[in-house]
Image (cartoon, rainbow, N blue to C red; front, side, top):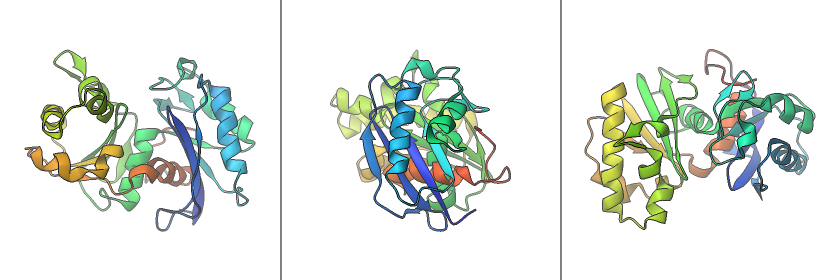
Length: 256
């Protein structure tokens, strides 16, 4: 990897960016956050991303961008918590044009997974690691022997007739005012389902809820070890930056 790169994490409520030291996984300056424009159309979002990049003087770095979309060959194929115009959209070309430079594009949960692989709880772990991000929805990253398998979308696994994220996302816990005990029962069913489908060697739990691992992880009874993520809110930025300079031997290409 190069020593430094720039990461931008595009979410449904905010767009965040900062330069990253790729030797340590640390941000080298305080991140800039701007609310996601509404509607969050591709060109409106691209303008905000360009604004964030231009706010840093050292902005000639490689740029990686994380999006809440399935990303394939530079196209965004889905849209989660973002405008539906992103579906089947040439996102990499449009973002590169607005930012005035080549960019690398990756799914936001996959970016978080790479951050945990390179610098966090998945580092040096063999076998199958499943990183889940519990937030407004549920994102996932599958990593096998250090290689990312992109666009897993395990928040959409159907359980009891519902997409899992409709019942077990952290946002659901907040909206329904669930106790940690009640929420843990939903997570128990979710992670048990993933165990039965994939037999992973490790679960890593990220997203905002990972700030409170003692509230729910001890309530889970699983065959698979489950640990909190380390990078938390900076994971998308760090993973996107790392992806911009990664090679096919460290990450299966998920974007342009």
